[in-house]
Structure formats: C-alpha cells, structure tokens
Image (cartoon, each protein chain N blue to C red):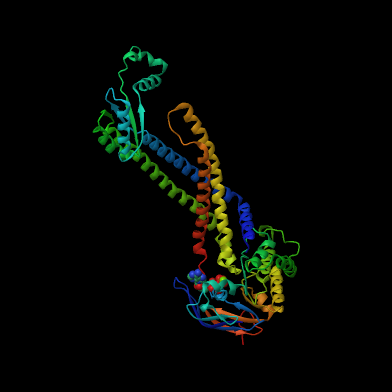
Length: 229
Length: 293
Ligand SMILES: Nc1ncnc2c1ncn2[C@@H]1O[C@H](COP(=O)(O)OP(=O)(O)OP(=O)(O)O)[C@@H](O)[C@H]1O
Ligand SMILES: [Mg+2]
C-alpha cells in the first residue's frame, strides 16, 4: 500500500531529513514510526500525502508513483489518504459536524450521503452529541476525535497520523490509539509517527525506528527502544 | 460543489468572520466613495467644458440696410461654409431687448434714451460643429459681402479651449490615479482576509479538495465584500451628490451641473462592477501562492 524506494529528502535550505529510506507497508497493516526529535518522522509522513516530493528515490501509494502525479491530480490522491496531526488542524469557524461534512463535500459527496455518513462517523469516534460544538468548545482529545472523523469520513485506504497524541494526556492518548486500532480493523492501513513510548510498548505492533534520516530498525511486534540482546 | 453551495459557503464565512468582514467592507466603501467624488468632479468638469465650448459662436455684424434677398443670400453662403451647423438672424431690435434683459431692472436705466436711436446692428449668430471650426469659419465669413464686422476673438477662443482641455485632462488624470488606488486598496483588503485564513486553505487541500472547489467560496467572498462596499459607497455618493447639486442650483444658478439622474444609477452600476470584479480578482490572485501543488 505504501512503498519507499531509496528515498532521499533534502529541504531547500540544505537540511537532509531522510537518507536512503526503503520501506514497504502492506495493505491493512498498522505501524508506528518512532525516533528522536529531528529524525525525519514528519518528513516521511509528508512524503506519503505528497506535501513534499523526494529529492531522489520513489514513493508509491496504492501503486501510484507520487513523483509522476501532476499537480492537478494530487487532490484525488489525497482522497485516499486520511491525515491527522498533533495540533488537530480543525477549521476554527466551523462546527465539528461542518468540519467533517466539509471534507466530504470537498470530494464531491452528495448532501444525502453526507447526512447519512457523518453521524455514523461521529458514533464511531465516540463523539455523538458533540456535532454542533466549535473546536474551541472541545477538549484536546475531542478535537483529535473530530480530526479522526474527518480523516476517515471518505473511507481512505491509508491513514497517516503525525504524533496524534502529542498534545494529549496518557488516558486520552490510549483512547485515540484504540480508535486507530478500530479504524485499522476495518481495513484501513494506518501509519502513526509518535514519541509515546508507553503506547508503542503496550501495543506490540510493527515499529520502524528512524535516526538522523535513516531507518535503523524495523521490527514486527516491536517496542519503542531496541531490546537489549 | 454546486453554485448554490458555494454561495452559501461564502456568505456563511463572511458572517462568521464578522469583524474582519465589516472592516473590509468599510475599507472598500471608503475607497470607492473617494473614487466617486473624483469621478463626479471629473464628469462635471467635462460638462462645464462642453457647455463653454457649445457657447462658442461666431457673431457677424451686418452692414446697414440689407434687404431680405441679400440676407437670404448671405445666410445660404454661410451655411455652405464647411463646419457651419446653424445660422440665426438677430435683428437690432431683438439685440437691444436681449441687452435690456441681461442688464435687468437695476441697470436698465442705463439704456434710457438709447432706445430711440438703437446703436446696435443686425447680426447673424453662426454655430459650428465644434471649437476647432470657429477659426476658419470666422475668417471665411469676414470675406463675405454684407458682413461688416466679425465678433470673435482668436485669442479668447484659444484660451478657452486650453482651459477646457486642461479641465478634461486634469479630471481624467485624477480619476485614473484614483482607479489605480482603489484597485490596490480593494485587492489588498481582500488579500488580507485570505492571508488570515491560509491555514483553512491548507486544510482544504489536505482533505483532497480541488483547487476550484477551494477557490469558489473565496472568490465569491471577495466579490461580495467588493459589492457590499460598493453599495455603501454608492448610497453615500448618491445622497451627497444630490445635496451638492441642490446647493449649486441655489447658490450658483448659472453654473452647469450634471443632473443627479440618471447619473446616480450609472455611478452605482460602475461602483458595483468595480467592487465586484476587483474583489473577485483580488481573491483569485492572492490565493495563487497557496494553490500551487
Ligand atoms: N520545512 C523544512 N525546511 C527545512 N528543514 C526542515 C523542514 N522541516 C523539517 N526540517 C528538518 O528536517 C529534519 C527532520 O525533521 P522532521 O520534522 O521530519 O523530524 P521529526 O522526526 O518529525 O521530529 P519531531 O519528533 O521533533 O517532530 C530536521 O533536521 C528538521 O530540522
Ligand atoms: Mg515531527
């Protein structure tokens, strides 16, 4: 579902964030991307939804070579990819409902489809009843659930989450992680970049560790830090 | 998204950005109002110039004792001159009456005793296609039999023409500069409202909205801001101009002014068009930097 072949990423200012990254994520897989600050996690995530284009190497999503994508077709790629951030990135002047409905309208969903699917999505993320609240009226955890609802409203093939629990307390974080597992169970490939050691260690899922732009470890049922031999 | 949805989206966003929208509308309104003032002034200067020019005529004072046949002959020769549009005969009796009227009751006693011997001459008033023809018509008419004197001063006419042309040029320059300033102010105002929401555009792109899906509501928003500002400016300019025209009629009756109607409606249309188009283009242009994938 996601393939990196020997990807180098150097920003215009000369900073090299990724070096020779090769990675393959199968359909329906769940994986954590971990590593110290500045290791290149966010860069890797941004390459997937083509916020960035690699300096060299190739990124494929659902079999599509992103480098070959014309700017005009990027929106259509993004419809298959849900994105979640540490700072939620909700539209502050839209209600929770509108934030989700908006994302569906953007991809051309009909009004009827929207009014049918949005409530179901709110149900899934555990926010039924909060539809009319503005983001400023919601807690961090609730805002992240709205962001998740928005990310999955269009049934994406892939969900990428860049430190989705970075601003949340441990209990709320576990709730968000459970939600990501649930989304994954329903068939969506999930990639989550994170610093949350406890979450990663308790989950025992695939862990890819980055350090200074290189993949230094890739373990099934891994932990946050390398286990001593 | 459909057109209706885009309009709804734009209106909703204007409402929720209330303060920002109000400030933008006010800015647009002020700049369009100033533009209106200059536009109205320029139109009136042109009107004044036109009035002055239309009053340019060649006055031919005739020899004494021409009979009707001679007058008729002279008139047809005058009409044959190139550039001449109309020839009016003014008898010396009529000329005296006109003079009396111009002087009014207060000064008419100056003419007492003059009336018996009327020192004035019969004359022709010759009208031309425009000021450019006056010179040549005057010269040609002076050569004709029966014309004794040409009441026309080359210098005066040239000076008048220089004045009217200067009025026009000045008016046009000012309006041109004001249009430029207005376009800059409106597009910059719209730009600021969009810059304030670059995050919104980024999120729209993230969820897979196409560029045009993102553009429409912003474009309409810019257009509505421009039109709302134009309506405010139009109403104020209309009321202000009506008042000004009334004041001029009362205080300087002989001053020609362009009547309020239909000018007010036309001005309103121009303002709405300028506001709407510049608002829409301004938002399109300022979105460009956010929409390059
Ligand atoms: N837009 C940018 N322009 C230039 N350099 C950048 C940019 N974004 C990130 N970098 C650099 O690229 C490297 C990797 O950054 P990245 O954000 O991918 O790290 P990260 O693993 O997500 O870190 P963190 O855990 O702090 O979020 C860092 O050295 C960073 O300074
Ligand atoms: Mg990061």
